[in-house]
Image (cartoon, rainbow, N blue to C red; front, side, top):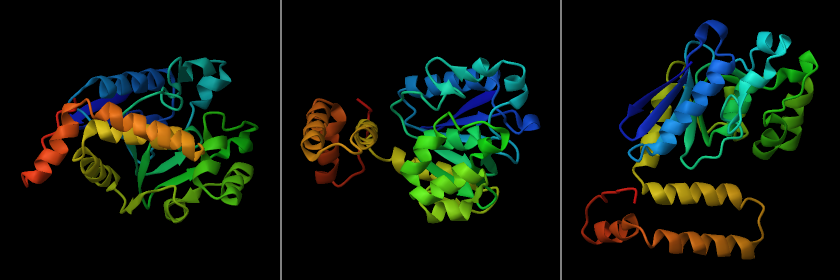
Length: 253
């Protein structure tokens, strides 16, 4: 239920259940975990892009499965809901949202590192409308990315916001026309993939882990990361390429 395709240095993950609005069932959760495994394990792939097939990015959890008492199938041991929201990983993933991403769909987006959305996209956590709570990351990740009152508005009303409004408040990195989210996300992924992959992963890790850390800890951890990179081939390729006035040839090692 989640397809995986390699395009150069980019792995494209596609939730492929369009007849059910890409709602997350057991197959989607297991497929997502397997696709992320492939992304993480392939040394030639440095960035991921996640999209949904059809006109809806993801409508959230399969409510039929929940109603039948099969909610446990919608998560994996390593990844949590949809095989992604709690997944530890090293490579950046860009969400390409070309339609509604609601409930668990928004929580999947929040688990990604960057977001490209078309003006056909919308985001929301409508769980309160069904006497549920957004337990897959929405309640704590939205307040980290949106102003407090806007996050509370989404949580308490359950109403969605447009891609334009989400971009205004910083949830979306780049807006595009309907039908263009994948291409725009791939272009952003290529910009990332031009950089040294090990440095990108360390930068991602540090920016996520050091949010809220005191300066002493942040300086110490940043310095340790620089020392670790100094033992890699790519660390020396960067300055060498600059001095030789050529593009660097990154090896990822």
